[in-house]
Amino acid sequence: MAYDSLKVLVVDDSAVMRQIIKNTLKQLGFTPGNISDAEDGAMGLKKLQENPVDLVVSDWNMPKMTGIEFLKAVRGGSDAIKKVNFIMVTSEADKEKIMEAVKAGVNQYIVKPFNANQLDEKVSAIFK
Image 1 (tube, one colour):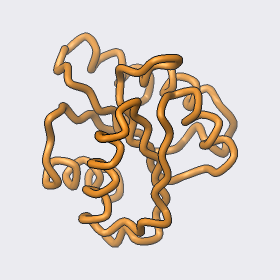
Image 2 (tube, rainbow, N blue to C red):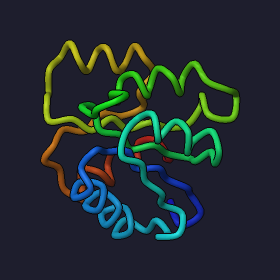
Image 3 (tube, rainbow, N blue to C red):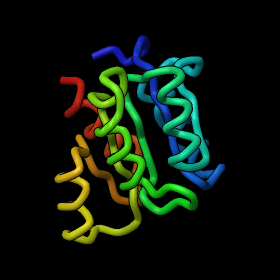
Image 4 (cartoon, rainbow, N blue to C red):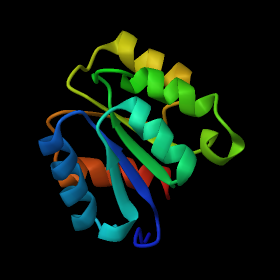
């Protein structure tokens, strides 16, 4: 599938991690102009409400609003945003956390560190 027309929002409190994810998405064929970012869930939610996207790639551990709080806010949000595809990124492969994210409506889950192939698999699983 071609990802060039899809819009993505990358949400992570680490500027370095946001850049890594954005660069990886570009490698996978996403158009740089269609990739936006936010430094926490609160800012991510605001951006999402202003400009709905096709995919959110969000970190779990962030200040102000965590990834899981952000996911729950998105799923409980307006029709324009609540069906957005959501990939949760975390450094913790804790089964309880994974189950909490699944119950909250996450589409895919990826554990840091990850490579382009792993991210591609998660994205492909959503947009197959």
